[in-house]
Length: 408
Image (cartoon, rainbow, N blue to C red; front, side, top):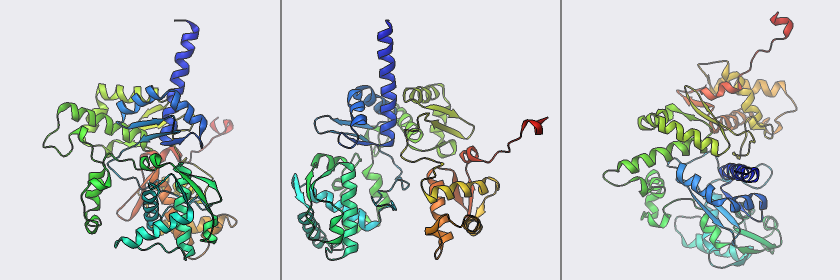
């Protein structure tokens, strides 16, 4: 093979690995918002599509003419660590009202390719008024308009709606604001990543609350693995083992052996399973670390995740790292009350830091936010009223540094 051919093969491998990691961090890529990433995935979509299908069983949808790429991730376990967030500076997660308005807005956007913020608000108001299970949308309430704007801003960030004229934020101050949108109805439909549509579940509205776990289970049920059948074939079972293990490995911060069932543990320790994991990690540009407790993927370029730890961009992340130092020193863990005491000491030690956590119950909110960060990265667990570190937390343990003079 010529040097040019070798260079082309290496370039394709690098592009495929980069494209896989970009999609793991950002499952929805639009040409308008991320042209370079979109062009890379579009160019190498065949090998990238094959990688996701073989290892994870996830479908990659590439629409060059419509200008978007969508990786349809599926998981049996709902992930509460990546909520939709408000576009404002605080980046607070969506509450129940904002999720409700987001769903209603998405449904109403399917009615036409162009709309205005006022017309859409009227449609949302009428839809919520006609549904006995929803509180009617009140355009006269600033709080309601703010929730409405947050939902629209989220859809803008996804590329599902495009502002042609005006500013969405102006609606917060006045419901007479004039904003014109272009709607990508196809992309709106693609936002829901589930093999089964909610309308196919056949659940009465009044029963959803009581049968919520069952509803989620039916929403993400995948027939290719023999789910819902009396028995699955060996082919279906082996396919599920490969996909379920790789989904955990590539979509979660850490893969602990304790979180796998007996069949999955047997798979990852088998020759075939080990080869699959090593090959998948290599093709995606990861370094695979294997420990007695489990597996961890290291991305040398830090592009495969939408969140990083340690991270000094938020108070909660800094507090998480500081409290993790304390937790690493106490193998048996600490109670929430003891962590409150530690947080109070941190606030006293750094008087100019964490100003938003110095009001009523500031230490409680700081501990809660920090634990949310640590839990999302699978660094701690809460059991028996105590917070204990998990094995991956030792990567961040303080180490004693000795000078050359001290060693001699």
